[in-house]
Amino acid sequence: MTAANIPAPSIVRPRRRIPQFSSVGGVIVWGLVGLFFLFLFALIATVVLDSFATTWFGSWLPDDYTNHWYGDAWAEFNLSEVLLVTAQVAIAVVAIATLIGVPAAYALARRNFPGKRVITVLFLLPILIPPITYGIPLATVLYKLQLAGSIQGVILANLVPTVPFVVLVMIPFIEQIDPKIEAAARMCGASTTTIFMRVLGPLLIPGILAAGVLVLVRTVGMFELTFLTSGPSSSTIVVVLYGAVFGAGIRAPQEVDAMAVLYTASMLVMLIIALRFVNPTQLVTRVGTD
Image 1 (cartoon, helix red, strand yellow):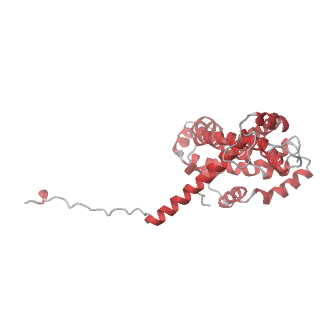
Image 2 (cartoon, one colour; image 1 turned 90 degrees about the vertical axis):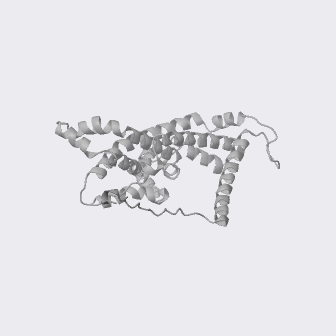
Image 3 (cartoon, one colour; image 1 turned 180 degrees about the vertical axis):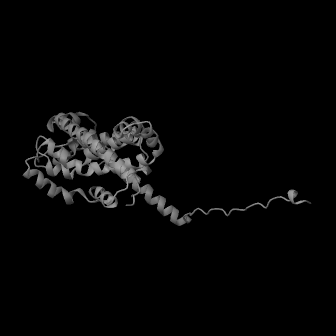
């Protein structure tokens, strides 16, 4: 037998072991997960049912159902004005945070400069630190500047965590674009503004949309900063909901539950829209080196 006829030895690769739970451990883990989702579903179902209940005492289900609590809540809390203020604040925050955050994310993703790691950490601090820790000093400054209590003050306060959030979301999208595309555009005589608007802009639309929707959700749900800087004419729906629960006066709990259902449903719709444009794993970004 010649050397050419000798079959090549087959390479046996060891099988990769997949860690598995033991039978008892798996039952415990999945049981706890199931109990968590069961309690969560029961909590949401209780609020939804109570928002349609006429009376509900000592029974598994309400005695009867009605939808007039939604109309009562809409009239009593002036939800049309509240939703208008919420939309104005959210849209302004999304627009300004995108205009500032996208160029900042591009600089952190494409440029190496002294102190880049420090600047990146500073961008992450407003996201990692609880808002109440810097919300009180921020509100004090806004009150001294006579901006607190107005829509402008609420917008400025919400920009503190949302601009870094846009940067955090956009960096992975920018890093996925091949730098050779920008180099080819520069060789053709395109300026930085032209490259950013006509070359990178269309490629970054999914990321910008994802960042915008996520910032919208974050702004509508931001309670601490909005509560500390808002006034009677600049409160968003989450602040009004808090006031309805803990404020003075006697009101039907069904009205509060009806407003909570409207708030939760709007947040859920925005999250579903956001997940159509972004994969949650894309929010994990790597910190560049100096």
